[in-house]
Length: 586
Image 1 (spheres, rainbow, N blue to C red):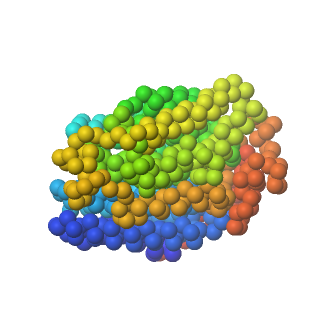
Image 2 (image 1 turned 90 degrees about the vertical axis):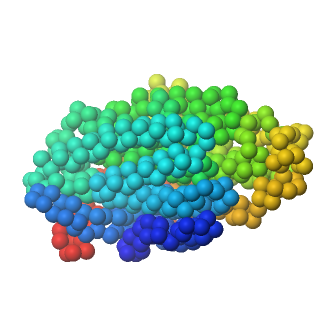
Image 3 (image 1 turned 60 degrees about the horizontal axis):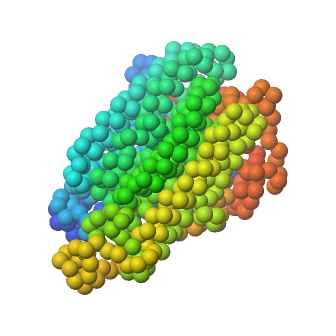
């Protein structure tokens, strides 16, 4: 399994030379490589055991280099945080390749090669078990997307690409300094004095320092702010979101699909992987103002989306609102919110990635994205309308689809936090509920104006007019979805329905890791009397209701506000620290 994980991460990069110079060969080779990567990543994810409590089920770890006092490793692994985000990278890249089939004429070889490099970077981010390796893959996602926007984007592509690059690079540099500070601080206070960048080992040793009073909240806060700067830009969290709408509008369809579906999730993943487990006191102390920013972002994103006349820009601002819900769930710092936030990251990737793909298909046919240029398209394009309806209902959280489970858990977690511990934050929970109403307003209004009413199409693309007709033959009326386009959207629809009907299957594989990594932050956020209390188990608790029907594993209600720290030898065994492939210890 460990070798299979390594192959999966590196396969897209190894497939770059297969992408030939001719457009036809380039896109077929890219599709083949991405399909193989999707199959391998899906096999790994669905082999992940429900209820497993190991930090990494599969790991490839060997000594990459040793210097006096420094331990460098190359480690890859999957756990409950990354198990669904990992295959989502390949799934959305599969969609991105198919929606670009006819959209990219010039430089097709370079375009598809950049997509493959980007896929390796995204997979590596979610599989990395080493701080330096995580940062390497983190930066590796920045460069391909910069070129995808800057070369194959629209009119203001260069400005959008530069703004995206500068915002993300500035934040990531601060994140790197924060991670480096964590490693150096830990090494100075450990008896062995070894500078380690292993994520599981660093998490364990920092927890021991905190338990011994050697990692005070003041020190944590400075490092937390450095990490927050980079992760908040990547989410993006209000008011650091200004680069996102322009990047989405100017990016090619494939760039928008991957930016919304995967790259925005790296910020939320960073909060869960580093900020909450390694800096729990700072996370708990910062939670109130981060929740405030998230709630403001939800309302701001929704109201701004209502005012848009461009379909793509509307969906871009909806991402600001939807990812605000994810952050709201993370920093509610209770099991309900954390599970909902992580699940909602997957849900948002499926729904919003699909929405951008549909918008790209509309643009290929009509060469405009203005909402007032359309009307009654459901008559002309019934199959496209079906997928648009499904993705819209997923986005607004219709019961029975994936968005409902995530939003419900987030809102329940926020109300639980306000009700039990912080009544002053009840207004933020109410604002989040209002954001759900606004989301339904702007998305249903969009669908109503574009797909219902009298048939209305842009004049230059009306059947029989110059430039009108089918986007591929150039003749006759505008055609509905092709088999290729259906194949690009159908897998997204399948998972939207599956997660909506059986969220417990996906949640059960997140639970043990979330419990292990965020227990200290949850304990720090709760009042002293509550920090030692475990919520009641059984089928009547809120989380057990969601978890009913899980194939295996404990009910989610078993998660408490504090997880007892395991003995050092048990923790080392759990994280795979005693041995590596070369037989050496850490």
